[in-house]
Length: 274
Image 1: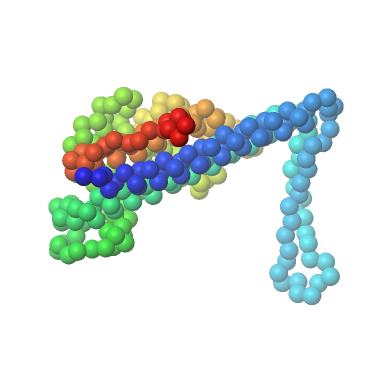
Image 2: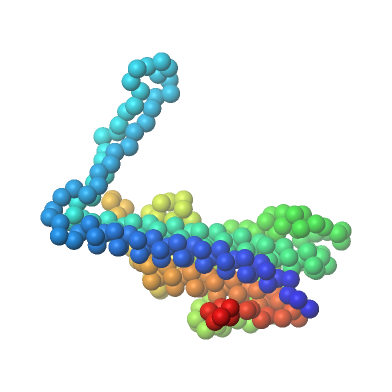
């Protein structure tokens, strides 16, 4: 029987590849551009910018463009530092995008699983009466039970799959996969909603969860301006994306095995069309 969960995984990998490729392309283009700018140049201003706003209450005013007393500038001597900051921004953005893609994948693969096995909805106590449902209704049920940091989704897979329970803690990385995913969820929240700034509550979280070593595996702390921020280097971002891909496969394999579906995935072959 064809594995109807596989297209969901394939769509996820296609999206992730696009995100990571754009990240690597950005790094190459920025570094090439910076190198050309520095060739045979003396100290000078490379870039300077200000921002502006309008007052919407000044109807009919001849002048309505104002500039706050702030500016951004890059000199030849500070170019390398600014390139590093830009790449950190790009890496943080890519990690956040990849997390969002994984979160969406998690919902979609459970939707497909439960659409084709609707009796499981009753077993999981997600519905009270067995009634045929369409995909959008099942997706809504899953999202209502998603919970903070997707803990509801993990709980669902744990109940459905022996394979997930067997390797949730005993795996090639020697870590609790669910603890790791919870940490990444918290980091994604900090990147998106706190503009990378490490808050006291986040510090309390990693201390209480004894997640400092796991944090240090992928991330650094760096002072940017007046704040201590999460800092991600390119190699670490790529490794983290690989872990997200591995987690997505773990979910796919766990759900597939619970149904007796094939788990084969066609791998890339550069010589296939030659």
